[in-house]
Each structure stands twice: as C-alpha cells, then as structure tokens.
Amino acid sequence: MTTLGPATVDVVIVAHNAGDLLAEAVGSAAEQAGANGVWVVDAASADGSVDAAVRRLPGFHTISASNDGFAAGNNRGIAATGAPFVLLLNPDALLLPGALDALVATARAQPRAGIVGPLVLDVDGSVQAGSFGRFPTLAGVVSQRLRGAARNPCVRTSRSLQAPSALTSVDWVTGAAMLVRRDAIVDAGPMDEGFFLYYEDVEWCHRMRERRWDVLVEPAAQVAHHRGAAAASSSVVEEAYRASFYRYCDLQGLWGLKVVARAVLPLRRLTGGRA
Image (cartoon, rainbow, N blue to C red; front, top):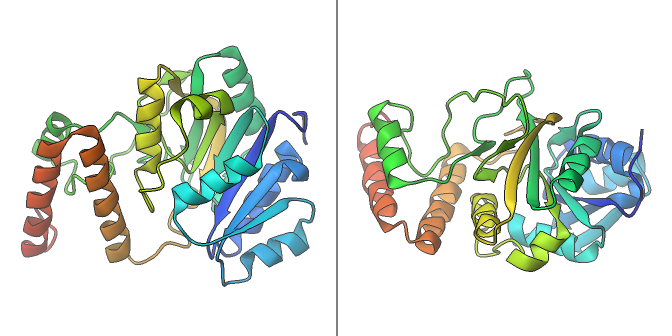
C-alpha cells in the first residue's frame, strides 16, 4: 500500500530486454510509490517486456532511450523526475513490503545521507554478495588473495556477507537498489556515463563521500534481487567488469591495483581460472 506522498520519491528503472521480471519490479515500486512515481527508461528493448509491463500495470511513465549503459539510462530517468529523493531500482529487483518507507524515513532522519541502500537479498533470503562494501584497494585485494577469497581482483568479492543489524555507514552500495537525495546529485554530479556497466555505482558513492555525503545501508529496508536472471554470458560479464574496473582505477589513481589486475587475469586463463 502506498504511504508516501506523490512528490516525495520517484523510482527509476532502466530496462534493456528485462524479461518477465520487469513487470514484477514495476509492480513492487508502484505499490509503494504510486504508479505515477515510477519511471521506466526503455533502453532499446526488443523483447516486448516494457509493452507487457504497460499492459499489465498501466499508469507508470516510460522514457525511450538508446542503450548507452546503466549510468546513462539512470541519468535520463533522474533528469525527467523532480522529487527530492530518487530510488534507482534494477528491473530484476523487487521492493519487499515497507522498504521504500524505511529508506525515505532514514534519509529524512539523516540530512547528510546522500545515498541509502536497502539490504539486498538473494532469492533464498541470504545477503547478496557484492551489494555493499569498502572501496577496493591494493592492500585489500592482496589480503583477499592471500586468503583465497578473491580470484579476480576486478570482480567484487563473492564471500557471504553478514547482514548489519542497524543503520550502517559503508563506502558504497549497489546500484541495483539505492535511494539518492537529489540535493546530493546536484552537488556531486550525475552518474559517470563513461561506465557502460558495473562500477558506476562504486564511483558515484566515492564522489558522494568526497563531497561529505554519507552512504548508508538500512537493514529495515529489504529488496530481493534476482541477479543474473537476464544476464549475458559469463565471458561478456567479465569483460564488462574488467573495462569498468580499469576505468575506476584510472579515475581514483589506483594504478598499482590496475597493474595487479592486468597480471592476474592472464594467469587465470593459463591456469584454467585456478589462479
């Protein structure tokens, strides 16, 4: 049931061939923000998923766009909206009951909260790996490798995460579901469209924190993320991760980490992924 006022928050969903889950994502957002507060950026979909969602759940907004990447699509949606808070939601992510109210309540209570992320769960109810964390560093990656916890330094850790029991400050949260304060966007700037996919969320959080905005995880808000339901092949995903990770390293001056990544990846190929 919708409890938020129509001008409080807009929900932006970027969809490119999102499949049947798109209608479920839109439905969960419309239930909590109202259909008029939901904006789907149709990034050149060819699978009929956006039209199917419109037929099933009329009343939300659609924006036609070329497929220029996750950051570009979200920026188009943010620019089209005007509420003081914007929730970015993946087309394969579902807001669980009360999630949006909890996120907005936290953001209102924390005036320096630039980004508030929910607890992102896998479909089995466990905390989704790679949904929040600390910024990558050379020391951190070396430590993970010594523990055997990170075979690919370009990819976010796959280790299971412990759910925070209370509001927690973190370095970054996943763009699969994040509530963003519009004032913080105006201050720090929009997502970097130089990233096509992956690490645009980490870089954005980095910029927010540099501008002294807080990045938080609110466990009272939960989202179920069907990660990989419409994903490309693993090789395509790894290539996208690598390109974005290298860009992130360049922007942050993490050249040592980039060198390590370039050295490790060829070694993984020679060893069949065991390095």
